[in-house]
Image (cartoon, rainbow, N blue to C red; front, side, top):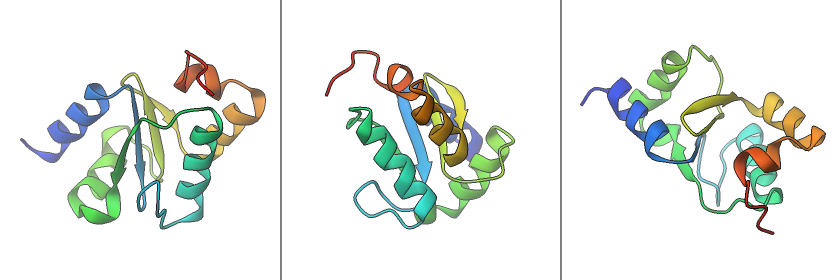
Length: 106
């Protein structure tokens, strides 16, 4: 399986996937940390988090996968939502919570 196939399987095998620097418990950049905080504020605790710093092939490959140059990248139901700025806009407008946590769990 090449890196693009691996990314495709990750994106399509999980309802919510966050490609980030570090982990949700120990983010390694402010944008990744802020994105995790917004997901948590929406009540989402169970999501796939892929640490791009742990795998250089994934780090390079995810940028090419959706032609999106920055990390973090949030995917929901196989579709790219965007990076930290777009996630913040969706969060502030109230659109992020129903997107990532339609059940509305606290």
